[in-house]
Image 1 (cartoon, rainbow, N blue to C red):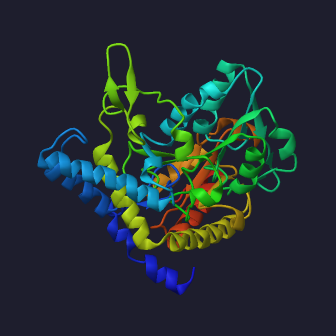
Image 2: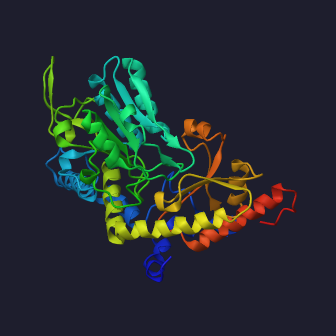
Image 3: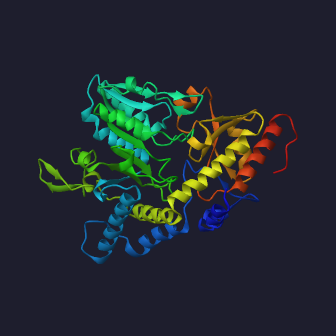
Length: 418
C-alpha cells in the first residue's frame, strides 16, 4: 500500500463507532464487509436527525415537516442517480435491498417471457440472482441457462457466449462482482451480445457499487440493483435502476397508496416515475441514511476506495497464498474485488470462524448464499474475508497469524491462549 493511501485512510476507523468495540479483550477486526458494512457516524447522525427533527410521511402533507421529509427523500434519489451516473432520478426506484430489487424486476418482466424462451444467468450467482429467475423460468416453462465458470482462472468462460445467449434469450441477469470469488465480470461484453439478440440485461451490483466507480450507462446494461447496507448505509433500503424508456412501459407489481394518480372503484392509473414503483410509505429514514452514505463515499473518492481495496486484497492474497495447506478460490488479485474465499486445511471453516472470533476477528463461513457454486467447486463450505475502506494491512497480518495458529491447533499442536 502506498504511503499516500496509508495516510488517506489512516484515521478512517475513528469515523465508525462500532470499530472501537472490544470482543473479549481484543479489538474488533471486521472482515465481513461482503455481508454488510459498518456505518460511519455521519450516517447515524443523519438518520437520528431525521427522526428527531423532520419525521413525517412524504408527498402527502403541506405542513413544514412533510415538506422537509419529502425534500430529503427526493434528494436521496437524486444523489443516488448522480452516484451511478443515471440519466435522471426518475430511473431510481428505492426497494428493501438487492434481493427485493431482483424479485421485483423478475415479476415486472414476467409478461415478456413465454414458453420456450430462455433466461441466462451464470454459475457464480448469489441465491438472490438465481432463485427469482429460476422461479420465473419454471412458472413460464422457459429454459434457464448458465454462463459457465472456468474453475482454473476463476473467471466466467465466455468462449461459447454466442451459443448460450441466443435468439430465444429474453433476459440476461449477471453479477458485477461475485460475492464468493470476488470475480469482476465483463458486463459490457455480455451486454453487447445480449442486446444483439434483443434481450434485456440486469446486473446484480451489490458487491461492486460500494467498492469501485460505477457508471450504469457505460456498462450498457438495462437494469442495475444494489443495497444500502453494503455501502456503509442502513439496512432496509436498496436500489433498482432501470432505463427510463423501459420503466415507462413496465407495470408495477406492488399496489396501494402513493403509486397511483387516479383511483376509481373499478380501475386505477399510475403515478409518474419513480413513484409508480414505490407503493405505500417508503423507507424515508433509510433513504436519508443512504444519502449520507453516498456523501461519505463521495468524500473519500471512489477511485481511492478502489485503489485502497485493490492493494489490500493483493496484500492479503499474497500472505494467504504463502501459507501451507491453503486453497484460495477465484481469480488472481488483479481480476477480483476485495473478497478472498479460502479453506485452511485441516480446519473446518466454521471452526476457523469460531477461533478467529476469539481474537476479535469477524469473517464469514459457509456457502455464502451461493450453494450451487460451492457444489460446483466441490466444497461444502469455505471461509471468506472481505474488505472495506476501514481495513488495514495490520488487520490482514493478524488474520494470517491467527489462521496459522488455528491450523497448528487442528494439526495436533498445543492450543495457544487467546
